[in-house]
Image (tube, rainbow, N blue to C red; front, top):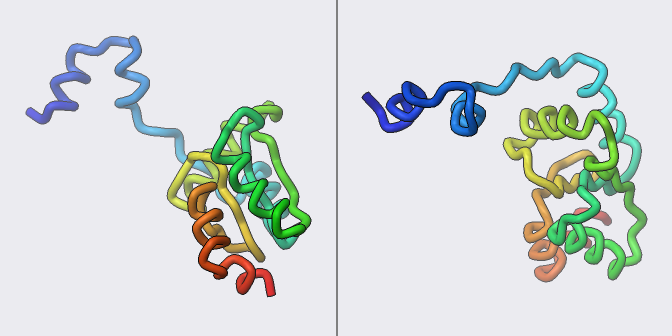
Length: 127
């Protein structure tokens, strides 16, 4: 028996069962997924963020330095923010924030954005 199976055997409906449960499937043709896709297509740079997240601030600061306009969606200020993150997880392979999109393509998070800026590749993506 695997370690997680042993833990699951002894976990009732408590803390651990939450982490061991499988996520609900995401309807990628549903209204939330459609809205996320429309938001990504709506601007050259789109950042899915949380207001308190330092990595989100890092990504925003990069575009501020570059004087590039961007759209920010603060997921912690939306009632459907968790659903947005589920959709972004399917689209990008990560549920974490920020999720930064340039011209419709996910470039990663805050550290990725800063690294692309520092090596000059981010400007090339925007040209």
